[in-house]
Length: 301
Ligand SMILES: [Zn+2]
Image (cartoon, rainbow, N blue to C red; front, side, top):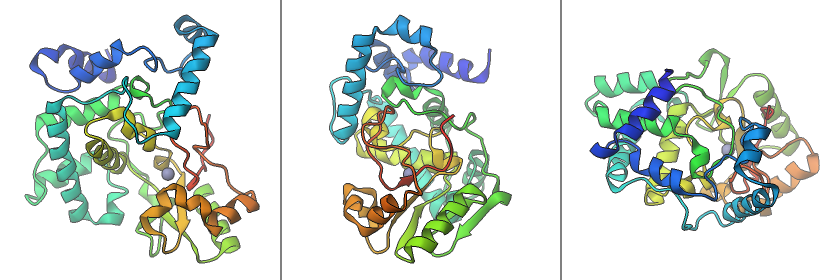
């Protein structure tokens, strides 16, 4: 039995103790509409036809697109963490936030899970992760995200995957890094063509960084994993881990990650230049809201 299978089985069998993801796993299994990964590349044609006929598939796609458009709402078939898991999630969130403060905002983008555990153990200001916290983190990482409505590809196989730091370049003034090669070349090209008003708002994100963002979002959504995943890829699923990046307009701040970005001259110039592709265009099949600021660097396949 491989590790992933082992953990998943352990989760299902831990239902009685109320530990880990038992409750949302069971809820997921009982939910019909989005419980099958209708768009996951990993799903074979025969699996698809077994699961859903064409008409149904069509309505499921429409359903996913509608939800992604109205991404900040709760829906009846959304998947939630249990109360107990939500409490645990908040302690993890706070611990990761303390870790981010300790290592610094920029460095936190690159930190691997093993290093995170080590820092937490060594520095009392962070404090070591408890076994239950680690179990919930592992469960979140291995649980099939299509069960709660996220149909994007998994790009990191292991929770402990590391960023190859010898291949990264820090972008001064941004607090972010880019991979040398395609990502850095494209960013520099955009900078040259558009000027100093275009800024890097998020570059490389390690699994730990994505975990922190996803947990923070889930906490804000009162434990609603489906709603969190409509705005943010679950840990292991972010293409920021392998090369994609986000851009914005200087001075726009957090609004760079809202629909306000579409109305900026930066967005207009990006469109006119024809140099970029969006990872999550409008009406995408991944169950994710439109992200006009997210630049696709890495190919889908
Ligand atoms: Zn992004």
